[in-house]
Length: 113
Length: 117
Image 1 (cartoon, each protein chain N blue to C red):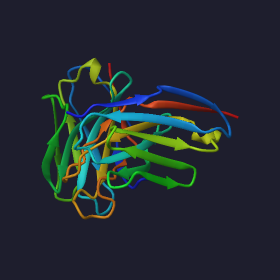
Image 2: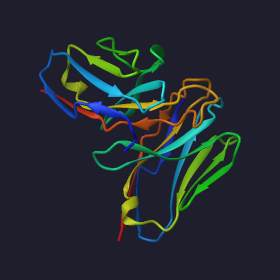
Image 3: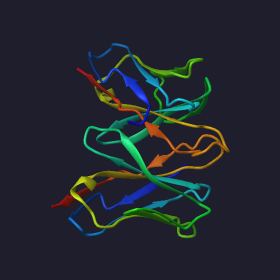
Image 4: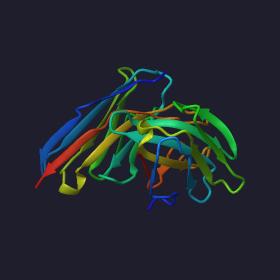
């Protein structure tokens, strides 16, 4: 089955800095890679996703890159703000109707004002 | 607000008991997924239903079962509860079929926090 590794487990930055979270996956059949943000005690929220037919996707201060050859994908947050503080999960899944995601263990991002 | 609702928000029960968690998907979504989130195991996929039929199973214990009804709401039944079943249980919904807009995107409900004492 799929295995997703996520690093780092904790990331502490100053407001205004950039943050990068990296994930690797094992199953070359995976072709859909969502990222979720989860604030303490709240639901995971889909913030951005990428499909294997593109290498990069951007939405305002958030971008995701995918390298299918190396089987890794990354989340980039620029100009971080205190409200970006949360746990971020990457996931990998295969198309074909089910899209069952395998999640990474999460990265706790702390943005200091 | 994701449009996915879950009840109850909190549940406290004793070992050996049985509980039912309920989930209503976003309007138009045919697929429902159930997840368990605990501190040491992260987010674990349990089971998926699509338009009333079981589609995929993950690490779901035999003591757990689920179903999706004709109105597309879903219930997760947990029986013979153990202390280790204490966790946050999320459901998520998605369009669920290839070709649908946003296929693969899952929207999570607020979760049910289960505490087994």
